[in-house]
Amino acid sequence: MKRILLAGYGNIAHAFEKIMQEQEEPGSYTLSTCDLADGNDVMEYLPHHAEKFDVVVNTSLANSIALSKMCIRLGLDYIDVGIEDGYDNIDGTPSDYTALMKKMMNWKCHSHIMLGFGINPGILEHVYQKYKPAGPHYAFELEHDNATSRDHKVFGTWSPFMYVEEAVFAEKVVVDRNGAKVVDNRLRAEGGTMTLTYRGRKRRYLPIHHEELMSMMISCPDLLGTAYLFQAPVGLQDYCLRKGKAMTHFQIFAIPVPQNLQGEDHVGILFWDCGERLYWVKNSTMNQSTWLRYGVNAVCWQTASGAWIAYRLLDEVGKDHPHTMTELSQKMASKIDGLLNTIGLTFYCEEAPFDVNEFKAQIISYFE
Image (tube, rainbow, N blue to C red; front, top):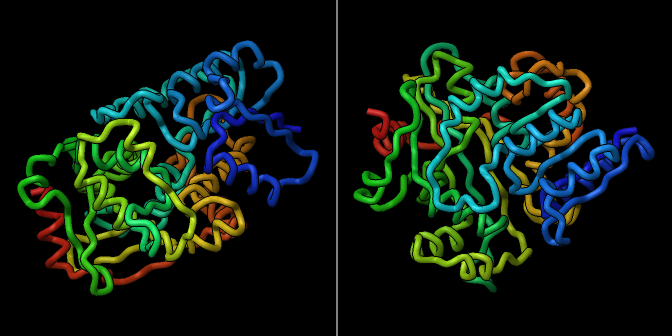
């Protein structure tokens, strides 16, 4: 029986708990929580209670590197849905994840360490590995949510804090073979966002920094450039970009997140083969159906699904170094596909979602 400590008990943690109840045999595990809301900091709690647990699953904003190193020292297995800098990082300078990931692979471990097993980072890295074109190409994580609300002017289907942290305070970057390039000044000069037309509607995206972009670049020399093109539901995006960095923590946390969730979350990888083929391999999840089934929005369920996949793969990977989804996708793609089908998280290919000339002008021009 696996004794699991769940660090953080927010929406992602609740979704993970529900998935475990659906997918795992009763009696095969126990689940305990350690949450700041209850006055328990996992970094302080774990050293005094390590003997009670076999696995730590981090869905919180606790520093991923510090917590994973603690688990290595204590001989505990570790799963993280991201690679977080810690609770207080809202000023936005991206870490050098390329150097970090190369360094991570040389860590000496004696337990299973799984870093970045959410949706992004995580499952989308597998989508990249499976669907990437042969030869030179660009690949972009692309997400937007078409949820709307008649009752709430400022409307979001996930944490406003996370959107503000990643899309308002953090530097905007694109990534090429030379590393991350900050594009804040150009974005500001060109209206503040990148714009693409999807199904007749203008969508505004921000190129935010995510660690899995570096993992993808390291894994494939044919990947010339990448970015994470991110859009929150329109009301939340408009409000946050208009208020900008003048927002206080109090104002951020006061933004309501009502759960009258109409619409879908669209998330996937947009590929361009440097010719004329532009295709989006994506998942579309109904926010309302996910809320009714799991009590959380689509983004949180998708993220928790990645953590569950890591849990299922835990005893199939080695203890010699930490693991990422990119690495495991290259080694056990069919196993991951089977787990995605089990959880009902499927992806399909949409050809030419955007005009190629618009795409070149709005996105590719940032790499030239």
